[in-house]
Image (cartoon, rainbow, N blue to C red; front, side, top):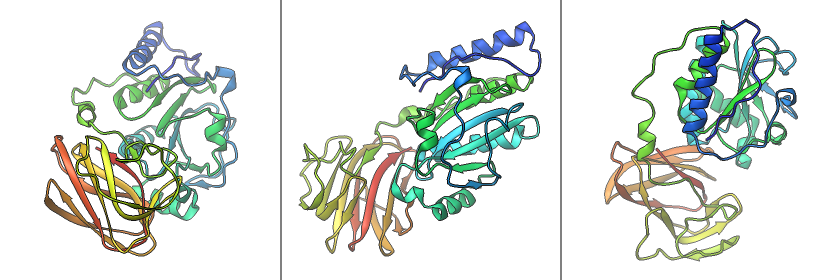
Length: 334
């Protein structure tokens, strides 16, 4: 994550004390993030919303029509667990400050092909209770115009159209809210000591089944596409998963083509999610550390929760798939 300082101006006149507080806030944010660089965007180069297929919850918006407002542009995708965890805080900002001069624009930029289906996004927006404007960036034109690289990513823009800063990933919600409040001419909220420490206990990264980003499949040095028969390794190292049965590997997913198959995973987290879909409804048998978990029925393309606990030790997952047609995209953790 990173949050950069850009040129700053306000439609109101801040006191020098308030200006110093804003600068200190953003420098504190910057020092708390990693130094992954984003291609610089100067205050005069804030891009517009480009190539938007359609808008949800709003007529079409432009940066010109939003002049005079504080704008928070939020890049997200509906199957991204990091986006889903951050979304209630984004909704909170919109509901709290929409009548005080804030506009939130959610730019839905798909990571997987199924996320480019407008009906799927409509359903996700309703299911998640999103009330702020959402732009469907199905061809990633806005994503590319902003040189964005992350889900979620938020860009804060002042009333004169200047980019104040950006934040990648989850966390630092209070700091972002206080930045919004300062741009709106409001006082800072007190620090919340509870913060986001639960995320620090997660010891597993997102894992991909598709060959384009496949790094964690045990026994595979060079991913390749096509139908293959897999045998489960005898032992999985931490943050490795294994397959058994006949699977078709594609750039984005692994699809079970045999009559039955299994997925095993060694992970360190309290919660386990899988982005998946199925040609026909399929009910997964789930065991964690040998203990049965509630079964999960998969069909629509979305994120499914396989394990939900507060136990952040190492765990062993066994996932039994009773029939062909499951598409497995990613594992993610919480």
